[in-house]
Image (cartoon, rainbow, N blue to C red; front, side, top):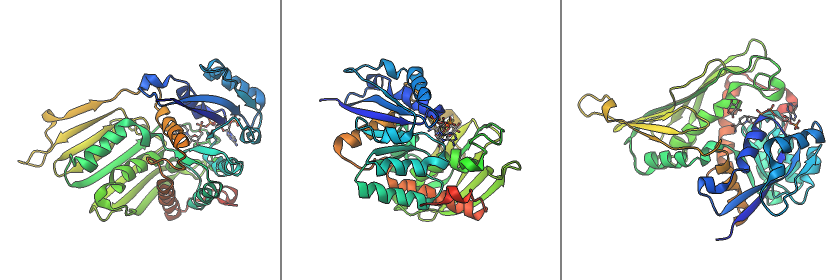
Length: 370
Ligand SMILES: NC(=O)C1=CN([C@@H]2O[C@H](COP(=O)(O)OP(=O)(O)OC[C@H]3O[C@@H](n4cnc5c(N)ncnc54)[C@H](OP(=O)(O)O)[C@@H]3O)[C@@H](O)[C@H]2O)C=CC1
Ligand SMILES: O=C1OC[C@@H](O)[C@H](O)[C@H]1O
């Protein structure tokens, strides 16, 4: 089998761009992947060309294996989009900027993989999906947990093997003690800060993936009720809870996120007639799960009979989504099966419903979809 090389352009040089790039540069054989490989062929910073140059050295992109891989360093995103050497652009700006950045890339005819959350609101998502289709290019939100092999394993246990039997109840959460500087992107309304958009998308993804996409749910979107507590300093949500009613399953689930205190014991719990499936922390980087069978005698779970499964992550874990993008480009597909645009739109709609229920609106310039 020949190996397909995917040539990446990195748009922005912040924290997650660095983690993603380091993963791209790992040898795919270390995760037993041989059909695709990655090269970073260009990096762009809106701040300066020097910043791109420094980033290239920091992640080791100047020492890539391959036939004379040369990495271009740009001082503007426009130059990256114009680079004919780039197959796909990974966008790693704050979410406030995703809409404009994705639009720039799509208009330039580039394939795009954009960090989560995809946009600020669902109208922006709809417009970008339409533009990608018009331009006939690949588009995906980088919801990396969807590509973890352990996620496929957990979905199989619940959806096909029905390990917990009929699902009765479910919950997912993600809390972290985040920076309290009001100018940090996490709290800054001008950068679309707040718990829901930044980290709430993870517990929401768990619930949509495990319950929303359960075969017995028939693809029905959940009914959404929500509550938010907002930052006194900046007005964005610090604590948010969503109640999702999956009416066809007859199950109510909760999604909880906060910027004040770290959650640690579990990130997702699915309880059913035959037992409980518990996924351990971290919600954005799942490594293990435990199945607790339910005793028929009194309905309690049998803790002695619990079984834990742990799967190593040979790196940060962002390479699995990158591999999926590469395979789509190789095969001429415009969407990834594991993270289709319809799921991106649904999660945007749910987050927007919650924001609207709690009167959380970002500045007009960020909500615009021009
Ligand atoms: N998948 C995951 O695990 C994670 C995903 N994320 C997502 O990635 C995105 C970026 O987060 P993160 O890397 O932590 O952010 P950082 O603040 O570390 O980096 C953002 C980068 O965006 C560029 N940028 C362009 N315009 C602005 C602006 N007005 N203000 C600030 N930065 C700007 C800058 O790069 P330059 O100067 O080079 O243009 C900057 O370095 C977010 O949408 C976040 O939700 C974040 C963390 C983890
Ligand atoms: O995606 C993310 O996951 C980890 C968090 O620390 C970060 O703020 C968020 O953007």
